[in-house]
Amino acid sequence: MNETMLALLGFATIIMIIVLLLRNVTVPALAFIGVSSVSALILVLTGTFTVTEVGDFIKAGVADVHSTAALFIFSVLFFGIMSDAGMFDSIINALMKKVGHNVIGVAFMTCIIAMIGHLDGGGASTFLITIPAMLPIYKKLKMRPTTLLLICVTAMGVMNLLPWGGPTMRAASVLGIEANVLWMKILPMQAVGIAIALFTAFFWGVMEKKRGAGIDSTLEMEDTDLLEESASTSELGDLARPKFLFFNIALTLLVIYCLVFLKVPSYLTFMVGCVIALLVNYPGAKLQNKIIKSHSGPALMMASTILAAGVFLGVLEQSEIMNHMANILASFIPQSMGRFMPIIIGVLSVPLTLLFCTDSYFYGLLPVLISVGNSFGVDPVHTAIAMVVCRNCATFISPVVPATFLGVGLAGVEIKDHIKNSFLWVWGVSLVCLVAGLLLGVITF
Image (cartoon, helix red, strand yellow):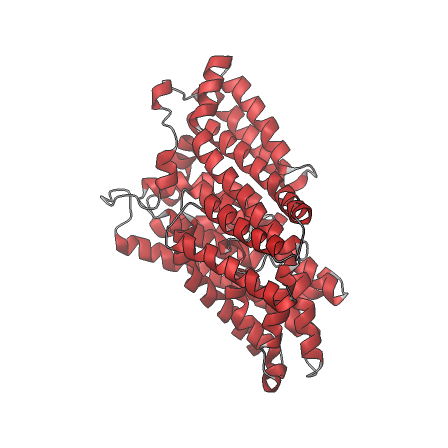
């Protein structure tokens, strides 16, 4: 198969997966594995790659996400243990005293926690810090978990522009400049983005309040199917451990500190945290076994989804199909529109984020667009800025970003609902940031 046919196969694969997810035809894991397997079979039957090569692609793809899958399993178990022990109930009561039953205040708190949590640039750790802390409050006030996710991903998108964040570093490496230099140019747009993230919290807090959310609300909780599927711990007896409250809070803070500052795999932090939490709160193999089983349902569901996404990424990314897709997209830009490259890519960044993983987007698409822009005298830095800022807004709604599945799994939301609820709003945030960049002179043409 030539490069054009490979690119078309890549587009067909991604579109089919997105359609299956949005139409609720099957669970994400089956969609990723099934469609990717058909694409892999086509690659083999056409003689493009051998079975061994495709197998190596899939092996590499799964290897890239296995740490995220392990992280999800042990983070779900850790926070499940803390929830069983009653730690979150105490924290929720304390938070409620601060914000009362103010729905808008809870939305603001979500945004601020997500921004602070994302200072390390890690999407997984931010979800792990924000969602377990806020979801019980949302449930108590009958606020939708999709709103929690939307506020989270909006805040994370603008904070992910920090120089130690992956996208900014990738773009800087392609440009051959220091990440700090690129970040200083982006900073005015990031400031606008932070303001928009806070407005997002306010706006959706108002919307939840108008919808009837609040402490005395009679609304039914929505979008919590995954949570409801988890085994109930009520059968295990009274699991609350109030005498270990301060120990559990200290242990949780230590785990979060290690996530941010300790240079060890995140899943190792949660593994050790789980061991300590179980041994202290629930000594005895029999009770420990029951508690682990009670949280195994959602952990297994989302871990299998993440590993299945690895199959998909292996087939498309390791085979360089995504790079061919980038070349095809770049070829569609008319010559007469070449000098508007930063605006074009800025407008299209959010939809493209659903198609390209981070590496293929910056290492595959960005160099191609820079070379196209050079022929029209476009500053490569302006193209990179448009791609970094506008793309970041949608990073954590993309089905090709493993951390997305961690977020939806923790919130108990199906990814199709997350995309439906967040896509247009996030795209709007992206466009506002782009306009701000043009007005502030960060991007010129």
